Length: 230
Ligand code: 5GP
Image (tube, rainbow, N blue to C red; front, side, top):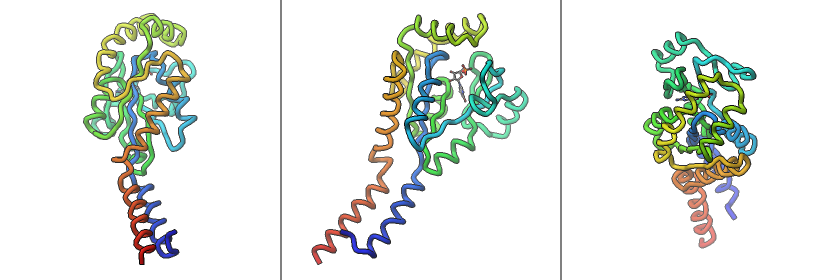
């Protein structure tokens, strides 16, 4: 056992290390209709201490979308002002609209030691990978073109032209799968959500991410051993 003095010295320091350890940035990409939205919602419900970065976009909201929940819907002018003010961690044109990740929310979360998921296209994933080298990227692969087409049609939110554009872009986006660290084949929503949750837990357990905390625990063992031998 640790002595009372050792306990009182060790506990606050251990807690401080945990609280100040930088959080993990998870970058999730897939073609439109790949099912990443549903997947992320499921994972947010089951994995504690995980938040979601709400992106900014110039596209018009779909039927049930709420400003500040799915996206912050802004004008092109407001978006360009944000670019000029360096307020984006990354941004990209996708399907004729602009999409961007607000820098402040993400940096606030990870520097407070909280994990956060970004949902971005393959260009956004490449930018974040360069900027935050220990981020974790996950590609969600729809099981087939036919399944992707059916999902987009069933969603019923896109005009015929938008549907066509999304289907045409998908094979181009899929070519970038090899740049990601993990790939989840989204043939079953529950299984895919369990896989994404497992990736998050596994990354949290990486030695490199826990090293300061692990060192403290090991040091406490060494102190205890010394105490026992004296
Ligand atoms: P949708 O309009 O279907 O919601 O999204 C279209 C595409 O934009 C999806 O591939 C989605 O991942 C991507 N996207 C959403 N938010 C962002 C963002 O902040 N940055 C980038 N680069 N892409 C985003």
